[in-house]
Length: 235
Image 1 (cartoon, rainbow, N blue to C red):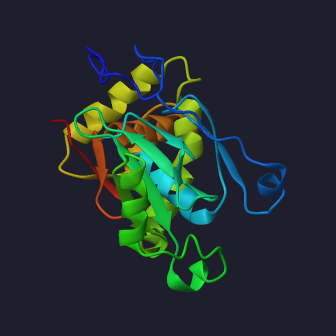
Image 2 (cartoon, helix red, strand yellow; image 1 turned 180 degrees about the vertical axis):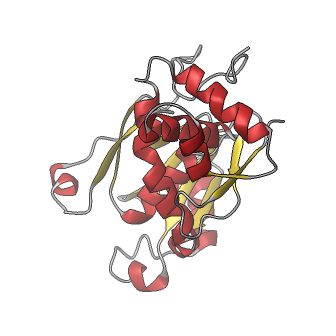
């Protein structure tokens, strides 16, 4: 039996191909604003485009969160005033819980550089969402960016996660990673790479996939690299 047997790999086609939302297309002004981040999402099997570093950081957390089935950036807008609509940052699909509508709220300093609409209080934003029939979860930029080591580690893992679906024998490599990780209380990423046959990038793709599946847990994201310890965490 392979390490992924009985488990849906993050990039595997979903039985439910219909999503209730799709990303709002970016305007020409947004695309040329100079703060646009684009990447391929294995979890969503499509290109993701977000407009600021906080949205990129939050999207990476969602990409590697095993409790999240999928997510959509800019899924919808809520009516803030008679003439102004406020864009919701993300819709997040949680199979074993309630789906979330997330609004990323700027810090007070950053908010002063944006529209007064985005500078509204959490309570005002929640009330605006409630009037539109949505329960809004507010996440603050400062809270997302506070754990910079975690975000940096996920950013380093992303290209390995992206290439995993293109590796024809990824199951074999994942079996090797699983066998070694299960035999130890903790093992360094470097030791996994050195102990298994195949190139570093192929082994790293298996490790990144297991992290995204929630089956490998990183002990600490500080200075993430070959010395970082991981532990097997199969439920």
